[in-house]
Amino acid sequence: MTRPLTVLAVCLGNICRSPTAEAALQEAAAEAGLELEVRSAGTGGWHVGEPPDPRMRTAAARVGLTIDGSAERVDRVALDDADLVLAMDRSNLADLERLAGSAGIHTPIVLFREFDPAATGEVEVPDPYYGGEDGFDEVVAICRRTATTLVGLLAHGGVDEALAARGSVQP
Image (tube, rainbow, N blue to C red):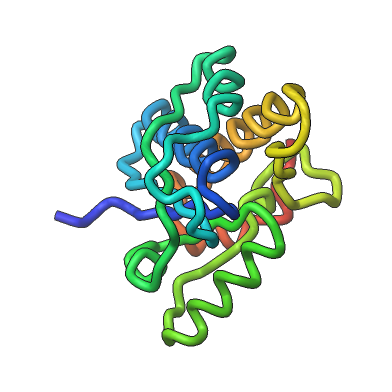
């Protein structure tokens, strides 16, 4: 028996973008019939133990997506256990690459939105924390469509095929 693929979504505080990506990936995997273990974490630790931002949960609930759990801080064990790590922005990507490099971890770490079929040059998931309601709605939409595309790639070819296809994803 093989273990399911493990994906780790990472943003700054683990209360907005990465828990939304986690929920969207779980939703897409269930719809595709793909056994996928998904976790999320933040590069910063100031929200550890807190639930996802209520504005994010509300935006997700408006379209039927449930976000739950509590914030965690990414560590070496989580990076090493994952088959694929998804950073929400370039700053998170750099932090994760530094952490992995210092620990000798070779798990692929990429920008989540590289799998977004609607991304037109911008491959960061915008941080809605200091903005209005529409920013949270935008993040939910980005995460759902990106998760659907990524899960499709993972279901048909695994991590290596998904990595090979990123950036060339067509809407």
